[in-house]
Amino acid sequence: MTLSERVQRAGNSIEERPADEGLLLQTLRSQVQSLVSVDELAQLAVDNPKRARSELRSACRRAFEGLAWAYADQEMRIRLTDQLVDAVFGFGVLEDLISDEAITEIMVNGPDVVYIERDGVLERTDKRFADAAELRALIDRILGPLGRRVDEASPLVNARLPQGHRVNVVVSPVGLGGPYVTIRKFASHVITLEEMELMGSVEPEVRMLLEWAVCMRKSIAVVGGTGSGKTTLLNSLSCVIPHRERIVTIEDSAELRFLEHPHVVRMEARPVNAEGLGEITIRGLVINALRMRPDRIIVGECRGSEALDMLQALNTGHDGSLTTLHANSPEDSIARLTTMVRYEADLPVDVIEANIASAIDLVVQMRRSPDGSRCVSDVVGLTFDHDERRCVTVPYYRRAVGKERGVWEKTPDWVDNAPLYASVSKEEVEQWKEVCSLPFYLS
Image: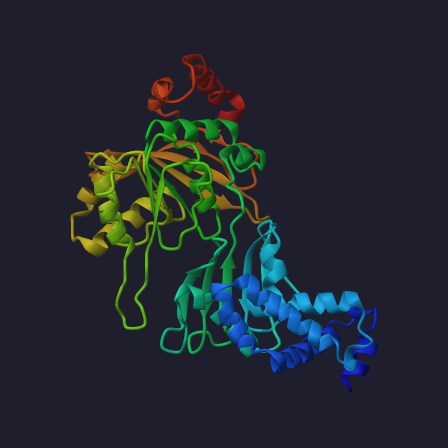
């Protein structure tokens, strides 16, 4: 079938014949490639993206002047041009998914299968790549400007998009049916504790307790599973930090956002380069942060030997700091931290747990329900049992999965001092304590 026949066949029913439009896009790309080097344009886009896009659109207009495109209307030409621009400079078939604010995760399971997460629920889309080569080209386009590469020698890579989205890539020989690409998206605006309350993720009394804890410089660990909302809550807590304080953030891939705070120093870990050199670890950044006069240290995720340095920092005057870690429950977080510390130092377990109890004031558990919603399920304090020689939890609040309200088992003793640090009166604190002790919270 000739190009003219394909265009005529597509006609105005192109929305009903996506395969025809795919063939037309391939034909347009081939013709444009004969007029200008698409690879050179992609390279030009690194230094002058506006000019590169302009030259590609100009080449498309020249290609449409051929007789073979006589049957293509203006709407089709604009649509094909936009698709080619997205394929060369953007995210190709993923462009619409990237720009959709409702989508929080994009999972590419090889060239033919693309899933998304929307409102906490997985959905399979009708998106697909022409072949594995097109998917690999997209991966190279993502990683190229970041100085990262992925190949058989290094088949795993983590990266961060300019928008702040986190990208994980797995290729062969590790990815047997790949390449696999997972993109964790983050909202363009910071979700505050008030917004989390409106969404039902945090109850009003829990929100108030967390706000007071941040203002009172209580060190907080947010724990939970993958995708449970740990980073979202951590970012919400950071919004409460007074603007007069200096914040130093440490992350594996920078995800935290500070749109209003005037004094934030952000640091990001770096993997080894192609020569096996240049690695900068989270632990190294934690140690360096102590020399930067921080009021608060925020570690995006604690997952290794940096736990030792973080605990030492919290126990030597850097209180009020925040971090996240993976754990199934507040009790499990103690074991996880103990294990991470022992990666670096062969200290007695009771010594490590004593440091954990002294360093961390609150452990906040995030949990995702089967319907995709997220909520704060537990808030506990930590204390060291000198008789048992172990760190134990002090339950304050518990909310079962699927329940609209949680149960208050105890209120922290330190909330009585909240008026000294937060914008709250003694009367408001007493009223809060009364609400937490009402029957519907204790039943």
